[in-house]
Image 1 (cartoon, helix red, strand yellow):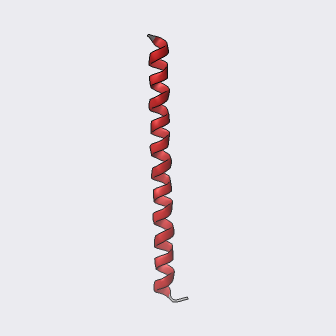
Image 2 (tube, rainbow, N blue to C red):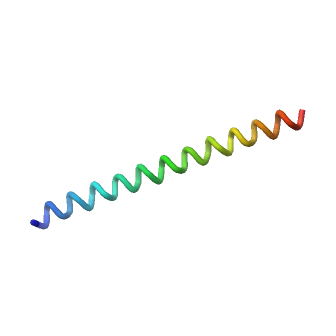
Image 3 (cartoon, rainbow, N blue to C red):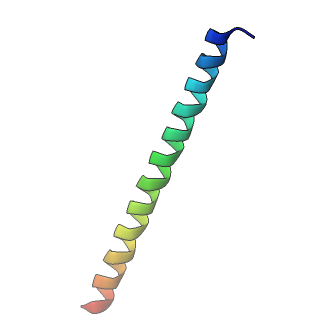
Length: 44
């Protein structure tokens, strides 16, 4: 395996990890928003 190929693979893996992290963050924010809405509805 050549070095350039190796770097390309690392880059792909890195991008995928980044996407995964962003995805998890967004889902977490959505869950928190939903949770807050539910609490507000319960409150009123």
